[in-house]
Length: 262
Image 1 (cartoon, helix red, strand yellow):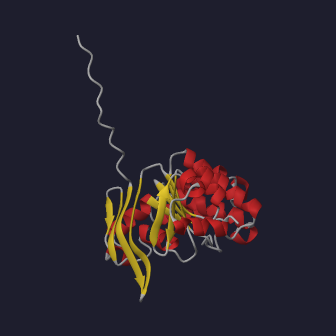
Image 2: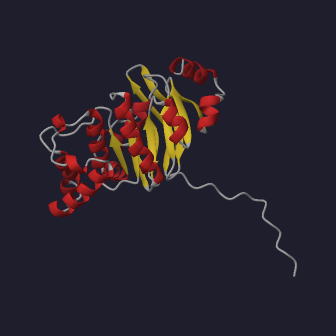
Image 3: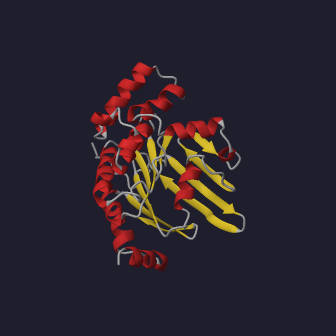
């Protein structure tokens, strides 16, 4: 019997889990995002880098429905946001936020709640979990981020790195499939940055989809599957870290990296 002839057709690439198509955002005459398109596969870690004011944080907020965009679409799994959806809380916006948690630069913890209280707030109020179940899960998450012994501490009693790790645990308490991280180490000193970045790398190993706005070029090179350079409202470059960071193809990327790596 003759052997089957191997197929020469390459295997289809996995469908993107996050699909941004032609998204634009303006503030008056200023164009912040100019017809941006981006695809991210499930389990992929994408680092967004670029100059300040280039649109990185705005893009994350559009993905999470926190910021209205003027045109284009955002699809996360089976859920699609249109410009009108992102301007208010709709069923689609709520579904996207369940899929994609967001962590902010300034932590945004409730100052009157302990670390444990911050983590159980959304599961009990939004998901309707019992306080006992939410507390048990929250204690495991705080252990995971290295804060099991700080469950009863208030934000004022925590360092910046500890606050950010509580914020990560709070986002994980909603069981998202992905996280949007908006410059989450920019307010921390070098030692505390390491604490937070170690947690992010642990989440990457678990297969969580991660989109990270970061100025930590070394971390982007080490941990990201792809690096996307967003400058002047457009994607200047998109590719593997070794190519984008070490052998950039565009002059705009070279200009940016020459300034931040000097």
